[in-house]
Length: 191
Image (cartoon, rainbow, N blue to C red; front, top):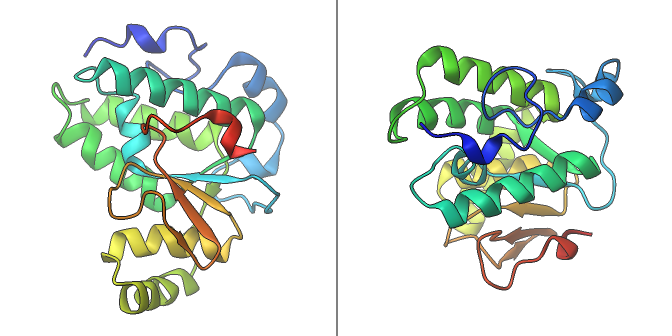
C-alpha cells in the first residue's frame, strides 16, 4: 500500500502511525496516553469512529485519506482525540481484511500499537454494553454504533466523528455525531 500521504508525520512504530516526535516526547510518561490508562473528560474531547481511522490508511479515495489524516493529526496535536478499545479492534480487522491491499497482520499489529501509544484509549467498561443495549433499544441503533455512543456518553465525550450515515448530524442524549468528510465540516467546529 502506498503510504506517502503519511510521510509528513514522524513515524514511531511503523508506517502510518499518528505519533509525532513532539507528541511522543510529551506523552512518554503520561499515564493517560498509555494503553489501559485512565482518562479524564475535558471539554471538546472527540471520540473517533473506526471508519475515520481506516480512511487514513486507504489510498483508494485520496480526498478522504487527506481529510482523515488532517483531522487525526489535529486531534493528536490538540490532545482532544480519543479512541476506544472497540475502535482499535475494528481497525485491526478492517485494515488486515478489507483494505486493498490489506495490511499484513504484523503491520496491523504495529499500527494498533502505535495508535494505542499516541491516543488516550477508552476501555469498554462493564457498563458500556448495558448502555449500548439501551441505545440499541431506545434509539434503534445497530449494536456496534450503540456501543460507540455508549462509550462516548459514559465518558462524557460530547462529539463522535463518524462517516456512518445513520448517525451523522444527530445528537443523542448529549452526544453529537459529526461526519468529518462532509463538505460542511471544519476542524474549528470541534472546539
